[in-house]
Length: 171
Image (tube, rainbow, N blue to C red; front, side):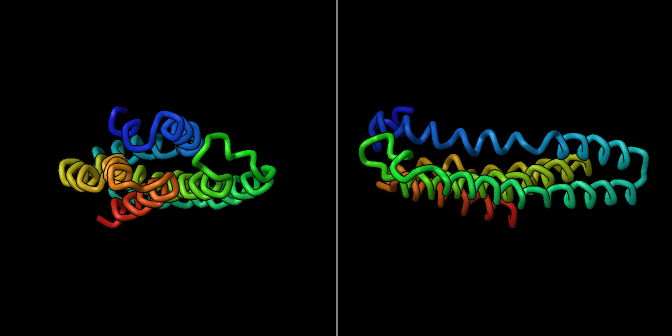
């Protein structure tokens, strides 16, 4: 917190925390599909039934397609908010807050969910150290701190968070 509050000030940092709750709440909206799939894949691999594990992986990936609907609903809701309503702190415009919310919603609906499924599938195959290393080396939280300490605003932090989430999936 001292780094964030120092570079942005307490008001802007508080606004970031409020805006970031949208992403956090959307991230929980997978209804446990990834966790249930991970358990099923782990059991299948332990039984030697690799085909069943792959089938479960593909099924949960298909279920994640519902994220498109969630993102569309989120975008519609954010654009229906009256102009100026999101400018609740001096120094952050309504449009900046809107764009940050949309980028964080995109992060929650796609890279975060995809990474969650991939991490859990790797866990089921009993090879977590490699994935843990690549996940840690592309940490969105680290990039968020770097962006802020370099003078970036809330939009830049949200964009960096989204970009590094995408890079984390590829790695």
